[in-house]
Length: 195
Image 1 (cartoon, rainbow, N blue to C red):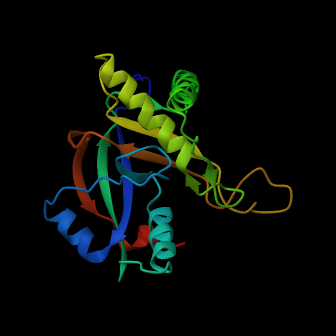
Image 2 (cartoon, rainbow, N blue to C red):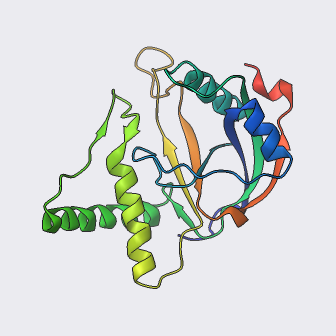
């Protein structure tokens, strides 16, 4: 919602090796539009964490019907631009308001409110996705400037030791909605993909 943080960040996108090569040769990223995407529709990146991007795509490869043949990661220089930043109070307040508005819409339309689901980490975020996409729609209908990116922190995974406040898969994720915010794509050096 603002430009209070640095303008550029490095993001890492986990994908199949063929997709990575296409991206490196200039093809455009494909936006995810799953109902369970954590930050709404857009292109997803792990901020400053290439190894987490690789771990994600390796996990994805193990799922039934996975299209991942060889896990890979590409890096990107991302300008956050007009960002719905959920690391800020302003961003959190905007999503909280959007949730109230979304519940009103569901009530009037007599439709069931989606739920976040799947384990303690709520890996499928149907409600969060719907609320953030609703916020984008409300802003669009009001003629307000669109958010170009969405950024959030996620505490995820097992505790790294007993009674730890730290989790093994905690990360900052960026969802890019405006492709002009992706300023460049680069090959990730192998040494950045090792533990």
